Image (cartoon, rainbow, N blue to C red; front, top):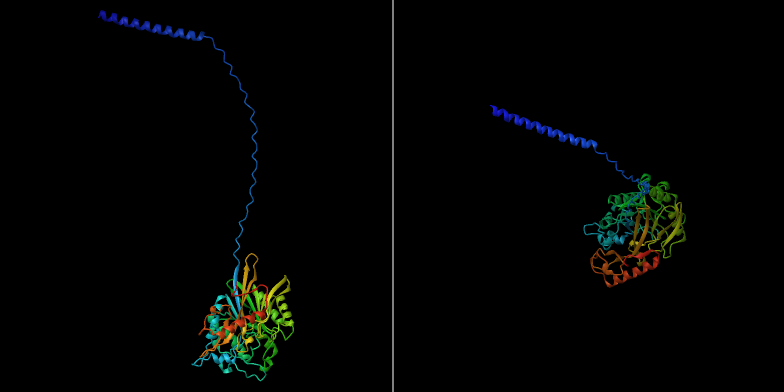
Length: 444
């Protein structure tokens, strides 16, 4: 026990001694820290901040003015209009086209023109023969007045015309009353029933108020047809003048100025929306002279009234053509006038069997909305009574410089027929004369 206590005392003393030493050490350190001089603060050099340079104001960028995208203007539209002269159906052609079953077939007569009729967008002709029916007797030379004919064609004349591409028939000519008032009305009805545009004669006053306008692939073309003289005056059939000049479009009375009625017809098709107006004028004189001065004066008045182009017929010969400048409300206008295309089909002396096929090209400018005549081409024609064994013998042919281009023939052309075509070509072009802006259809 004694020894254990001694050991315990020793550990206690040692502990006390360690603690004292620890306190002593801590105390010395504290004094040293208290007695140590406080160091002078080190001066930190002050760097002056540079005065910031002013930030330049951004240069304003102008907002570009938006440029509108131009509306594309469509390419100008072009259409072609074809025309030939008088389709005469005299007794010689009627008898030639008769078939074994008692009918009448006109396909051979028009077959060589099938391609040309179909080559234009709208084909026009003047039907110078009533369609009064068989009961009224077909074409004869039974008029008591010297040199006068009374025409009347079988309805079947319309079949090849429609089949081959004719679209419009004018009936405004001096033969429209050859078979009286019933024949005049029946002609109108039959032509329209067959699907043609028709003008020049009318059923009544209301019918006349309807303008003849054809929409030709987007161009509206108006047509007026009128005549200068009558083979048979209306009073001979008991038709009073007021009714007569309502159902018949009278162009002029002999050498006078165009009637107010025909000028109103031109205005009517204009007001009806026609963009180009063609007048078929059955006028002038049956002679070998150029167009009369009275006819030229009438042409200018028609152009002033709004006609854009005039296609003449009636003289049974090809006549000259010219451009005429006329004054209109909106300024001067220059229009082309063909005084006569001659006969398309006929049975007569040579110069009366020669004619012209004319092709007009119209162009519509969508920027201005105007329609203008931009090209005109002609081709002479000839009706030939062929020297072949069987009927039908009559055929109207295009007088190409190269006759190999003629189609639709039952038999090849003889040397004599080739010479006739060459002669007809030269004669027609001589009669027409050189007209600025008018070219030959079969030449470049």
